Image (cartoon, rainbow, N blue to C red):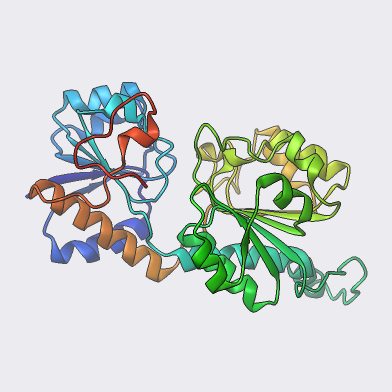
Length: 347
């Protein structure tokens, strides 16, 4: 049976993947280390590697894996911005989990929004100190407010359904609009300038590409309403953090709910409670009482973890059995200069 090496694995990864492996019988090896050029050698003797969002699959890593005879990178996540697809072209196949649980991420985005708006995180600590004052905890009704969703894929659509239930007026921007779906669900497609200008709440659910990197920047922030709330459960580099901090300092931004951060790979999923954070930008973000930062946990539900494990293992099984790879990443999308890989799919 194929031997699979897992990088950046936590106890919960091992729990769900070992349970799922009862149906597959692969030989699994787990490492807590991130995959990078220094740790790639840990995969020696394996047939595939399984990686997560903060593992580095750059050209040097892919060269090392290829030299060890590894022909498959199985991502246990939807995003693939950490993989150099040009280097992997015709050498190592790359599979992902495109839709493990849209509801999990969408519901976490709503949790961030509601917590920021009604300031329940601050109220929690007050009442535990016997402080029952509500001064400074003023929020606003979501009903009739304008929500702008950037990226109307599976997660974006799940969020739209929830926000429509709150009575919000929802607009969306997507590179591939589906007007019939918008009419059915009661939202409208608009351009980015209009979305920035009209939204009271903006939530990011688009993939990280060269075109979307720092989509939220000084220029786009200048177009937004005073007091706008920004939610990001996508990728940290969708936001220029320095520009966001400037907008927070000037009070242009009413609140920011962030489940991701530009330089999160050094910190997220790890425990620094007995140490300190040397990242001055991250420390500055944490100093704002209208910033709510969580550690990339939007996906983290029982249902999502079960789905991630099942789809990842089935991806691996299909690859080694020579079957059609439904979740192979289209190399052409990652590299506009390259032709599509035969059998690859454009997501």
